[in-house]
Image (cartoon, rainbow over all chains, first blue to last red; front, side, top):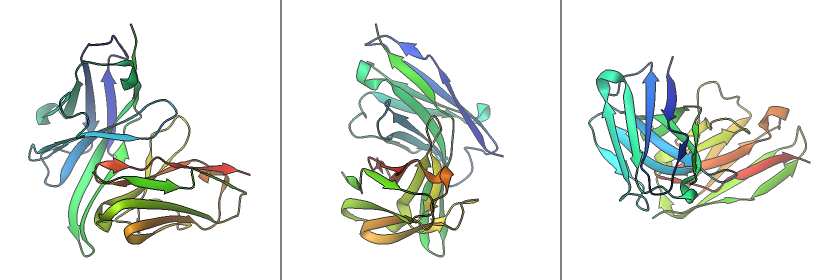
Length: 126
Length: 104
C-alpha cells in the first residue's frame, strides 16, 4: 500500500525559506519510472504544479518558480524534500506531494500522479 | 507554456443527470499525459482518468474520458451524491482551473 505524508513548518515569515518533506512508503524511488512531485493549492484556488524528481534524479521545475525551488531525494530514507526560498504571503497554500508513475503501454507512453498525500497548509505571515 | 482551459466553471445538475466537462489545451498535446482528478472539500485530489481515457483503479464506470489534440472531455454518465466536487484536468506540468459540479 502506497502512502505519502507531507511535513514541515506550517507558519513561515515573509522572506524565509520553506522546507517541506514528503515521507513515503510502499514504493522505492530507485525503481525505474517512479517519481515524486509537489503540487500546491492556495485557499479556494486551483492546483499548481511545482516540481518533480525522478528515480534517476532527473528534476523538473515550474518555469515561474524555478529560481526559488529545489527538490532533492533521499532514497534510503524514502523522503523527498522541497525548498522554496523568499516566501511571500501569495505562497500561502496547501502543499501536496504525489507519487508519479511513468511507463510504456500498448497505448504508448503514460505518465500520471496516481496517489497523493493529504497535504499540509503553509501560511506565510509576519 | 501550455494553458488548459476548463469549462464551464460551474455545472449545476441534479443527481442522476449526465455531466460533461471540457478541458481545452492552448496547443495540441499528447493524450498520454492527460489526466482528470476529482477533489472533494478538504481532501486531496483523486485520480480518475489517465491517458485521456483510461479509468484509474477503483473508479466507477460512470466516469469516462475522451478526446485528443486540444479538446478533452470528462463525462459522468449518472451523477451520484458523492460526485459533487471539483474536477481538474492536467497535462504534464499544467493543471486546468477546475470545474465545480454542484447540486442544482
